[in-house]
Length: 257
Figure (cartoon, one colour):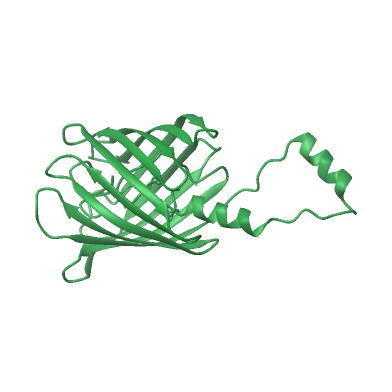
């Protein structure tokens, strides 16, 4: 999940995340602190400007620049650049592979690794995500610097642009969190979350500005190209607003991606 301070952005905005013994710093697609079986999507990218700190003073002490890229519909990888004073290590990377997926059942299983960098122990995880009509649930396990831990989370859209999130990771050194993701435009979103230590202590906050879009045009099959060629001159193919919003939410972490 993401460091001692913190589906993205998603996307997203996807994106709060680090080693096992604290909120994570790896901008995998997930909820506020936990990964999900979502990815940013084929040919899509997500960039996050992240700031974490104490909720009591609202003073940030951690600054991160996160990135995530989708390679096909089942694989994503990205990096986390820690811009905080005295950060060590400064650079980390992460990757996730969706091992199984059922669109009919809205069910997915993903395997991933995060917090990979010089002098750090990578955190490996497995997560199962399941969707219902009103909400989605996520459950998984991870292993890194600390003993193995289990985690679970829920996310629920409350409007076409806003999604509420909650997650919990076992262990006194771990955290539970509440968050909200807001997709202000197809390519821009925000994530705001509160991080509460299981063992007691000060509550932290995390704030993300998420930018997402396509870094590569989708590939078209010969059959699809033939269809487009035959349709030219009669009706131009135009992207729909719904498709644009879906792409934006996939890239913004909070909405799931």
